[in-house]
Structure formats: structure tokens, C-alpha cells
Length: 196
Image (cartoon, rainbow, N blue to C red; front, side):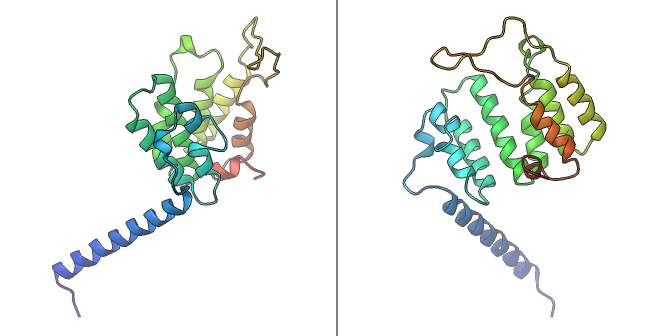
């Protein structure tokens, strides 16, 4: 028995609605009831491990909900600096990559490149390596890794904590992450942060 066009259209609408409902149910499970995430200030929302989007991301299967929450936050708040917005686009991209939404992640990552004169820590090499990993471009990943590894530590760089105590950081930043991409080439983004 052949369905008429109206019946087919109705089935398509119902399928979309049930998919949206399933998506909303997944988001509801991921978000803490009664929490107004959008009312949090930037530091609480983005930089605190037990609050904001990170609280959501720490729940199994909630990477997309965390990414959507970050997007909502950065598109709703009007008091965010360009640096804050760039950081949030990066974190949204990480969550999308973790969920396997690589094209969306790459588009977000591409917006975070810095002007060369403001990139003394090798951020752009890290971005390039991340994109190369997601695109499964081994040559570009290797090139970005070599460029990052060769980055000289800025002279006079002395990192301190909030109390002024010296802090040792690995140099260059993010090299261990990029080495994970190399070791886990062909695996998922989420696997590259574990023991692939």
C-alpha cells in the first residue's frame, strides 16, 4: 500500500518531533534541575570544574548538551570579551569533537586562531594539530606537532599562581595533547584524551 504525500509528510514531522523530544530528554538528564547556567558569571560558567558547562560535560553522554549550553551562553551574554568568546568557542568545539560532531568542531576551532604577534605560546600550532587530527590529515598533524615542539620558551617567562608562588608548566603548552593525537591517529577525539 502506497502512502500519499500528506501521510509521508506527517510521518516525517512525527519523526522529527520524536527526535527533538529525545534530544530534549537527553538534555534534561544532563542539566541540574533548578540551575540557571546562563546566570553564572564567565569564571563560574567556563573555568570552574564543578559548575557551568564542565559540570554537564562530566556526565556520561552529555557532550552535546554541554556544547549546546556553551553556545547558548556565548550567544546570550552581551558582556563577554573577544578573548572569552574565543575560549568558549574552543570549549564548545571540544565538546562537539568529543561527541563526534567533527565538522562543527572544526568550524569553531578555526575561529580561535590568534594573530601571530599574540601567539607566543604556540596556540595556532595546537589549533592546526587539532584540526588535522579531526580531518585525519597525518602530514598536517606531524607538521603542526614539529612546529609546536620547536617553539622556544619566551625569555623571562616565570609563571606564578594567584599567591605569587612559582609554578612549573610543561613547555610548550599542549604538546602532550598533540602527542596524544599522534599516538591515537585514526581514533576518535574522545579516545585521544585517554589510553587509546
